[in-house]
Amino acid sequence: VIASVAAETVRGMFFWEDQYKLYYAVNNDIYVYTVTSGATATISNPFGTTTGEVGFCLYLYDNNTAVVIATDGTTLIQINSANTVTTCADADMPSPHIPTPVFLDGYLFLADSGTADIYNSNLNNPMAWTAGDFISAEMEGDDVIRLAKLKSNCANS
Image (cartoon, rainbow, N blue to C red; front, side, top):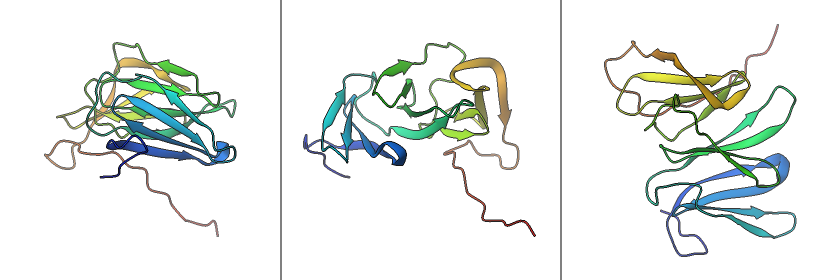
């Protein structure tokens, strides 16, 4: 457990390298620390929950615009470089889900809690979801507990 400057438990954190910004969730707020200026901003109440893990990832649109994705397992938000928040209001987004969002090839992936189902957003839109756009993990009989993207260091010969 890490304590923040607010002396509360940090629920999750993410560093956006291109923007030199550190995002960290405390209670139901997100604090944004800009390394180059030392400025801190607060994104107030993006989540309805105050406990549990908050997961982050970077999402890259096909026009090369990047945003930070954050989720507490029920609410999904995107934060742009100006710290403007957009909240997903799509009823087809899995909820509750495991708060470990993963970006891959223009899609955002979330695992539905208590299932073996992995949902994907619409292509090039992490705020839009289509009913039935999921796969069920069948390799093991257990539920999905976390999503992760592993990098490959393969070189072309």
